[in-house]
Image 1: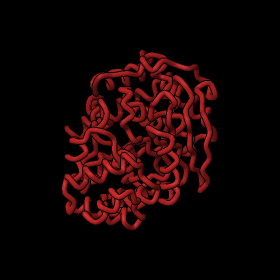
Image 2: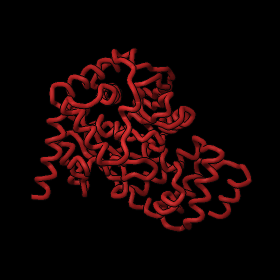
Image 3: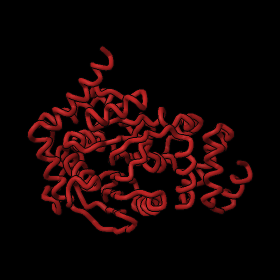
Image 4: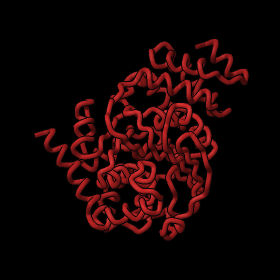
Length: 338
């Protein structure tokens, strides 16, 4: 580890094999907290390479607890760390998507570089966080959605938890979460804080065998498809990578106001999501959920076009289908604790 750190501090990058070795050291507890902090700081300053992302991810996949599932699943896990203080848009979108009978294996964690992590907001909503692979599979089978709590499936990541918290800024680990879904989701919508990193992640995902992924970066700084302005999209589909710009108007939505999306904590995020599903939320909040859920339906091949996905998602919110799904997910928690 010391040798490879010295290699990095001199301005060199790691090969895929070297990156895998480094992550193996972290995963097995052979790297100290200082070494981990030094590594991620160096990489944040110079920027991680595709080889490094692929090597790190391969190691994480080797050390994670995998969930084998027969059907295709979609994930809406993003990188986090955009600093925008918005509610948990991708988690709300996952609930909408699963309400339409699409299997969602939502990967996520508690807040590390944001106000509210996906695990935090689900807890406040009264939704169960699965505690075993059996629970996760049952939830996918019976309710079309499972929350894959990162610390449970990536227990080897415990060695990096304290350095991440102490540093406080986003690191390569923000990128690795969406790349290492425990159910090996090959269809994803990934919010990325930078379109430069979206490009790198698309190339890494292609090498890792992904099928259809949208990597999205709002020009207002959101790591979601933005409702207030244009969004840069990098699309990986069947080995081909394309780039384009998406405006809410392109899919029949009016531009909104990001102030309607801001929250201070997980409680406020949960309250806003419930308001949206009850038809009482601000228009911008409802529309951004429909927009991002529509994108997930598109990558899941549930619809042929993004605008069709947005229309279906909007309908699911308006007719109570999404709220019914939220109540069913809550009921699951009550059954588990009965």
